[in-house]
Image (cartoon, rainbow, N blue to C red):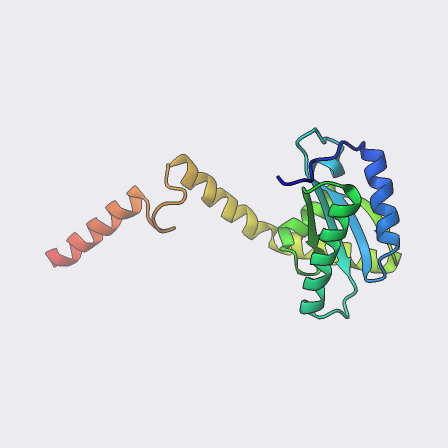
Length: 173
């Protein structure tokens, strides 16, 4: 793990440090603490998960540089090597939804911008929730059948049997 370890810091001190840091970052529009610290369920093995919405005028390359800079600075300030930074501008929808739903808001530069981001995230999630539920059911079925991570999605014993019957019926005619 190198010279840096998981510094023991209580959650209140962590939040105060993160809030002070975020207030000094003009490119950060919104910041959340999520994961176990955000839920208030941290333990000695917990990492620190921080999500930020950056100024939308930044290019993807500038966002990438900011991601690296924020991660490095937070690692140094918090004196721990287990800080994960998520850039909300490019985060997957399911992660954005989980952060908005369960995360602890650390910093808001503009309340209207925060409300717009949250509304956009929730509306997109609600639009796609039926598809997410379908995919989750398919994954659970594959897990139950012992097929998760093996074969093709359309590859099940029942489907193979049906395909064999179909091929047999075609050759019989």
